[in-house]
Length: 228
Image (cartoon, rainbow, N blue to C red; front, side, top):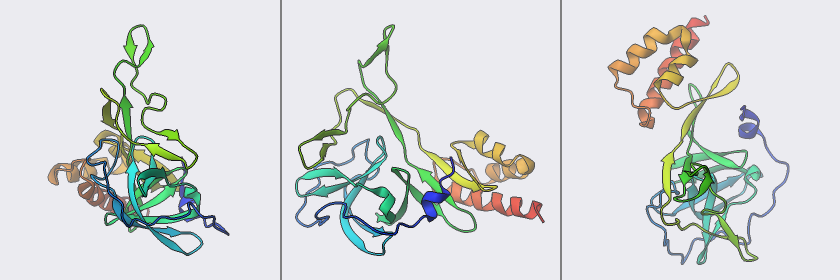
């Protein structure tokens, strides 16, 4: 997948996402939910490609990969992500990639994104032959109801969540992803020895984004030097 066009594309015009994104007077009743990236909804800033911006109380649904905002006593999906340039949430930066939002971890010397993704297994959801589903069941969380498009983010009883997040980098003009050491080293096969040594010396944990940022910056330094 190459999502560069989504990152750098600008829209000529803009439509209103909703009547109001005001966060005043709202109370977050969903805390530490496994399908949400942040422990609570937080006041955030949305920058549109047309140049204007709005404040909203946001969180990120990692199962459906959608931004969710609070409006009065309801939770709603942030619509029209293609019109958004950047979302600043909890001191972190997110950009739209198709219908999802990826966190920007590095812009220089190399672009590095984090795709926050979780899949859910519902207890007792049948797949045949006595097995249970390990994929998202229909309407497990994102239940649309009412004319205003509000959603229900509560977790069904017995749901099990597994992290399926991954990193994305731009390498040789293409968007490539990785989750672990084996996948990462394979991307830099010509620098395998040096990268393995760097990982060992610095105790790189691929669940630690700061460590991964350090590794990616080092790898691109090696890669750039090899092209000279």
